[in-house]
Image 1 (cartoon, rainbow, N blue to C red):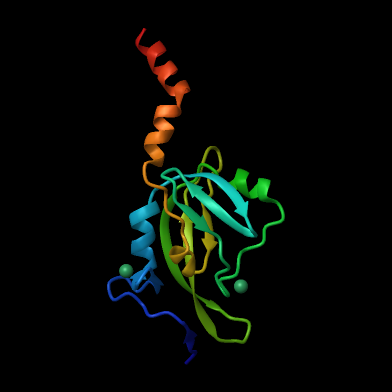
Image 2: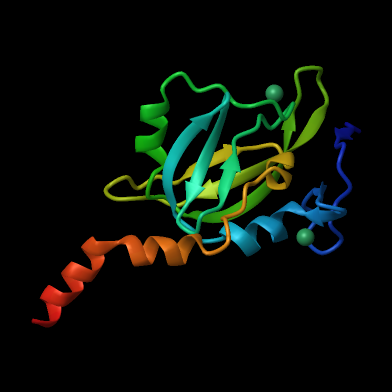
Length: 161
Ligand SMILES: [Zn+2]
Ligand SMILES: [Zn+2]
């Protein structure tokens, strides 16, 4: 019998890991689904050594290593941006994978949609802690953007005229 290393308590509903978000332990799958489920990545940025996926609704998810929760290092940010922009968070998975010491550990994975002519989706292992460190959109950000966006209003006018 092999032991499965898992430092996280598991959700009783779906067996995804639970992490402390704010003041309470929450299921990462339910938490991420609520905020960025089916949402599209619109940009990939790096800020102070941490790479973030920026979602269309303003949420920013930090990419933290699935095994040690340190920031993922990506030498070619442009390439990652090209690869990920336009994909939606479609689903999440938890998988038992072999560890370097011969045991197993639970790996949390995000599954992103295919896009354009690429038929393949992208599966990315990520630390559950990333959910706790996800940055939320600032209040009223959407409204401000809308009122400042003259381009959209112009196009709309043309459409009716
Ligand atoms: Zn759950
Ligand atoms: Zn690691």
